[in-house]
Amino acid sequence: MNNNGVIPSRCWCGKGIVTYVSKTEENPYRRFFRCEIGLQRKKEQHIFNWVDEALLDEIQRMDEQQSRMAEEIEDLRSSLKKTVEEAVIKHKKHLKIGPSMYTTELAERVMGPALWLQNQEIDAMLFCERTSLRRWNPSKVAFMSCIFSNQMKNSYIEFKKDRKKFRVEGLLHQYGIGELPSHGRTRSVWDLDVNRMHVPLLVDGNHWISMCVNFVTRSIEVFDCAGLKHNKDLEPFPHLIPRIVKAVQSSEKRGFTVKPYDVTYAPMPFFLNKTSSDCGVYALKHIEAHLLGMDLTLVNDDNICEARQKIAYDLWEAANDPELISRMGMFVPPKATTSPTVEIYNVIFTMSCLPSRCWCGKGIVTYVSKTEENPYRRFFRCEIGLQRKKEQHIFNWVDEALLDEIQRMDEQQSRMAEEIEDLRSSLKKTVEEAVIKHKKSGDVGLIGSILSILCLCSKFD
Picture 1 (cartoon, one colour):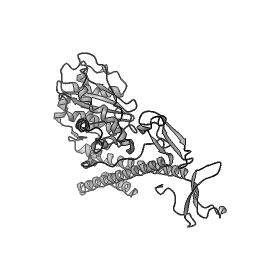
Picture 2 (spheres, one colour):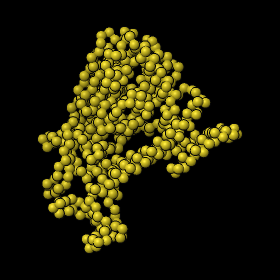
Picture 3 (cartoon, rainbow, N blue to C red):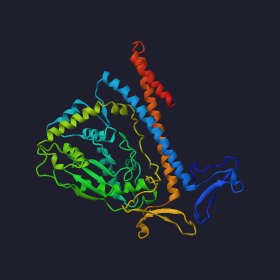
Picture 4 (cartoon, helix red, strand yellow):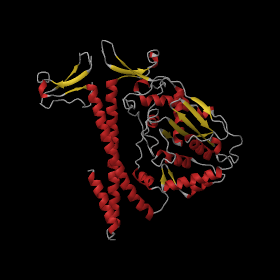
């Protein structure tokens, strides 16, 4: 078993460490490690520990380390935000909102009236919700972009050619693990870190609708202000989404067919969108209303102009938000995906490091093995896994799950370390530019701010 360095190689005395299996009545077949001379010199307290406890201790240590790294990231962000705020006050200009640019043309389209929203406005609003602005303050919710819907349509064409050979990889896989959309990437895994997902969709080339994908109930609810059904346009989503979910959760279940998600249409009042150009506004506001648990009928033709004005103001506010400006300044476009991505081999665990339910929705139960190959070895599996062995429901050994969790946390720490390095680099670059610009001004206040930032950067070096 690969222990990822959790089990030490040597005792304090210099002797090697050996792993054993307990034969006592209190801990039958429980694995432990100890110094190779520990039995002969018990009074000297040579290294001894249970393997499962050592793994849990390592997870706790890494969790504490991640907390310290998160505090460091927050301090760096705060300093960078303060620096950017000063720059915003001095230099007001059009700024990017994720993949979009807040321009006069964009604002005019949003304000209308009777102007059709384009991808830029839709993506800009949903980008604001993916970032830390979080005006709606959602919990475990993801927001996709317009290009995601196009990618699903294209992938579904390949899926229909040969369903058995179809594999979730490349861009679809990156969406499933939160690497895409790249602007405001969350790295939240579908059906693990995320319970619901909101998606905009352009149907028939001239009409916006939106939908909510619920990973818990395995269903899709569609919002169309026209009250129509779009079975052909929606067909890729109930078939591909469950496959993406399985692909990002377990490498062992990628080749197995899953039941498509159920699709329902939210009831709508008659004669909405009389101008035939407010469908994009309705799509965005239906997402907001559904997310907040509000009645969808609150948005109607009587107040759709006010809804447009609110969207325009929200976008203007986001475009001038210092935190958003700093994020866009540090944005690094993703590398083009031309080959299958590396799979993740873990499930996001609860405090007990075990998943709470299987991909099928059933609960997880922990057992003790009584087989000759793995006597008294603990494992967990889906509660209906024994009855449906051909479907390969969740099964894993507890010790291997702990190691997978350590590996996941180690990868997460690496990403946090990269973010810290990016923040330091951005801070230093900003300071260097400020020093060059104000070298001859003798601005004492600015010099004080610069020194404070440099001290903060050096604090974490």
